[in-house]
Amino acid sequence: EVQLVESGGVVVQPGGSLRLSCAASGFTFDDYTMHWVRQVPGKGLEWVSLISWDGDSTYFADSVKGRFTISRDNSKTSLYLQMNSLRSEDTALYYCAKGRSSSRYDSFDIWGQGTMVTVSS
Amino acid sequence: DIQMTQSPSSLSAFVGDRVTITCRASQSIANYLNWYQQKPGKAPKLLIYAASSLQSGVPSRFSGSGSGTDFTLTISSLQPEDFATYYCQQSYSTPFTFGPGTKVDI
Image 1: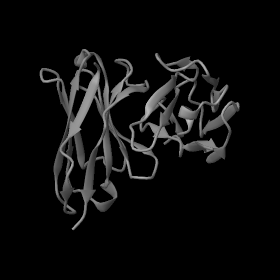
Image 2: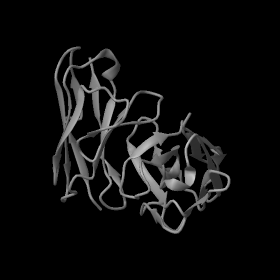
Image 3: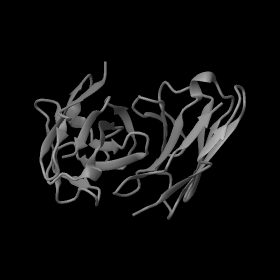
Image 4: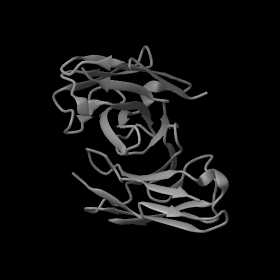
């Protein structure tokens, strides 16, 4: 079964750091671009970041650029999101999503269940 | 950044109705347009990719059309399980952007 399972979401103080993880299974992980997408409860979807299949290319939303880092370990079939200098507006449910192909310009065909990040003092 | 708009923001419909949702991009995105369905408490689900290609396992009552800046998602005969929020998303250029969503309810 193709599956993505996120973890690492907690309550953190403003200015703090957090690393989210996404464990992938059921597909050849290093064939695909991977993404992080977030959603404030009750609101819409916001794309956060992507990483190419080989980890050589990364892209970020302007709202997180310079604060977040995306990485992957293909040997562990895992995706990561390092979040620094967290702000209250980063509070959201964070989804890991698989690109439908190796191209970064494609849809997201598999999503995890999400992990909740709350930034609050 | 490419801005995505959707209309209507919500609609009420009956089982069996034909439903059409429109998505517009602020600049041409060719056919790099995808549609997702999200039910409360669940992750989004890919329905249509590349404007008109049906994702594997998605019922054929869902269809997509359009290119350039104007796109539509059509549900030919609304079923009870189709009541959800629908989002369009452009994958033409980063930052990838989603529309604000269209909530379909009874």
